[in-house]
Length: 132
Image 1 (tube, rainbow, N blue to C red):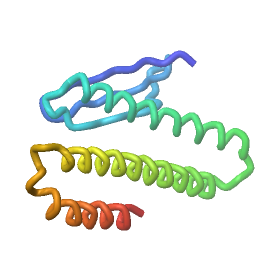
Image 2: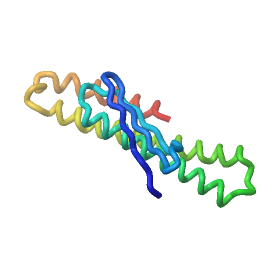
Image 3: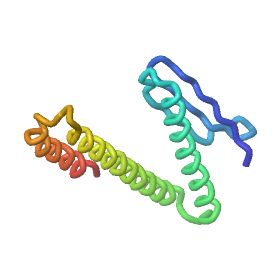
């Protein structure tokens, strides 16, 4: 399917939208700009693509299970999206933890390493446990 992507780069937030050829919205994405417009456009566009995939999934699910109650289809789609977002968050959290560990192992933080490492592990452990 042919689609179109539009990106609005703003000073505080950047937004992306994916449209079908008739101008209907398929997906949206938004992120903080952080004065890094290249990164912000990539993040917003990726999020718009993700929500577009969920739009296509919901359409196909509705087509294949046309006799199923709409409420049940909505619950299924919502559960899938929550599971996806949880895995997405946990992956990002693991990446952040690895980067933090690498930074802590650098010479710059050598004097604080012994004190900081257990505190960081506690923080990341709590974030992981509270994620669901």
